[in-house]
Amino acid sequence: MFLKKVYTLVFLRNETQILLGLKKRGFGVNKWNGFGGKVEQNETIIDAAIRELKEECCVVVNKCDLKNIGHLEFTFEGDSLLMDVRVFSASNYQGVPVETEEMAPKWYGYDEVPFDNMWPDDRIWFPYMVKNKLFFGKFHYKGFDTILNYELQELKSMETFYKNKK
Ligand SMILES: COc1nc(N)nc2c1ncn2[C@H]1C[C@H](O)[C@@H](COP(=O)(O)OP(=O)(O)OP(=O)(O)O)O1
Image (cartoon, rainbow, N blue to C red):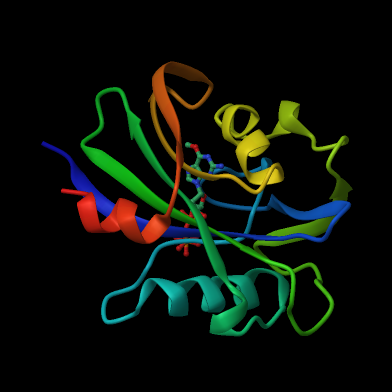
């Protein structure tokens, strides 16, 4: 039996580049990732995605510009937590990404994404995001470096996925 917690993960992208942030503290410290965190009580998932992006790199995005592109689930051997991560992409936003106490942002070309300094699962599902495919992935880790097993599938629609999800 897992204890599920919902998280957001937002990627700002354009045709040639993706914005990553180097996590400066907490979970995933020293790894490059998108911007996001826990959804708080009485907060919608979209509102959490907008809040975390602003807190972590000072960029403001409108609800209508955030596209839900994937759903990821992470579990860790010997831990009852299930991280339910809603992945979003946006190409319209206001402001210039700046470094905060939590993240140091940097634009990367799609062929220079620093997978060696990212979560190991990213190497597996990033190609779906880059090709604009919707995806669902489940990854079970031993520690933070080893994926013991995973499933990954392309989705036709996020709405249908959530409608059918138990
Ligand atoms: C395990 O594999 C993961 N891969 C990827 N790509 N991203 C992950 C993985 N596990 C978690 N994440 C993402 C999900 C969230 O965006 C962050 C974690 O959020 P965090 O714990 O930093 O949440 P906050 O609410 O910001 O936490 P604090 O306020 O307590 O710092 O990583």
